[in-house]
Image (cartoon, rainbow, N blue to C red; front, top):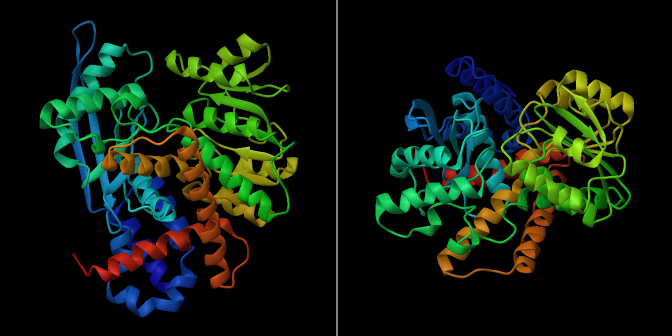
Amino acid sequence: MSYISDVIEQTAQKNPGQANFMQTVTEVMSSLAPAVAQNEQTLRKYSILERMVEPDRQIMFRVPWQDDKGNYHVNRGFRIQFNNAIGPYKGGLRFHKDVNLDTMKFLAFEQTFKNSLTSLPMGGAKGGSDFDPTGKSDAEIMRFCQSFMNELYRHIGPNMDVPAGDIGVGGREIGFLFGQYKKIVGDFENGVLTGKGLSFGGSRIRPEATGFGATYFLCNVLKHEGENIKGKTFCLSGFGNVAWGAAKKISELGGKVLTLSGPDGYIYDEAGVSGEKVDYLLEMRSSNRNKVKDYADKFGCKFVAGKKPWGNVKADIYMPCATQNEIRLEDAEAMVKLGVPVLNEVSNMPTTNEALAYLQEHGVLVAPSKAVNAGGVAVSGLEMSQNSERLQWTETEVDSKLKGIMTDIHTKIRDTLHSYGMPYNLVAGANLAGFQKVAEAMIAQGVY
């Protein structure tokens, strides 16, 4: 463990004040003891752990733009290209007021392992801006996206770095970004961005993919435990594309979604979020109001202001779909008291390390986000394949491929744990399985 501990300590010294990045570095590195024990001499020789926690490059730039009243604003843009050992950099763009270097680095680091788990040839990256699209007009968002791309275009390309959407970046934003990229480079490189509209190279079910994939992964976990999703109750957070996709697939498979949340609080719908209620989430997202209370007002269910559902609502499965660090130690303690048996992490790093440790110590089965939410980037990878071959698969074809990828991820994690003689610890298994492929590629390619 001394090699791992030394790397964690050195990384902390190099990254002062970057709590989110260090949280994910600590969580991942602490899981790698079995791999290090088997191959420590080679890992040390090539400084694999040291190189793995250091991004290839960190790009920061200003983004000036004009609002509808003629006033000028300046935001900060980011692209962290973390590791391309197994393929071109791949990862989303996030537009949110809380975006900073720390957030981008932790997301890009996580993305490296997540992409490795998919078995698709994609490296890890992440980017975005502290621009907040809430309440902005389409024209303001277009002008911002065009300014953002005026700098980003220098650093991306179909074989270099392929961004996608994330929080605050949906089909509208991807369209604006692609339009500006095409204008700048003078070429229709539709493989440079994923999450595009179907009319210009997008893939079917991409908006639903993260939620669908998370549900498919959960089905494999439940099957391993001798159970199935039918009749299970769910607490979800968020109400964007991820929660929408999850709620849609859960209800299709016979589960019942009880909660959704937003910045203003959470709703509790005893009848379940299904049918037209799921469809309404799209209207809520497009409204730019960012208020989950709109759902409670429309369907007459309970709304709790200023809180998350964690530890407040009993359910069979918790699925955080909003943002990082939304489940903290006090939430974990409340979950254990309620007897919640499964946490299926959908958003990136939704659980703090302290909360994660507490949940596992008390027997809660945790499925980690780097495996659970890989469905989004998996379908992005499928979109890249479709773009390169100038074709477009049907919804059924894409859904079938996504389901197969999520099953393969679970199988890979299970088999990795078995190879090390370890129990069914999905957190450790995902880190080990993701690490192995990246490390092998880095060793094979030498020090560069």
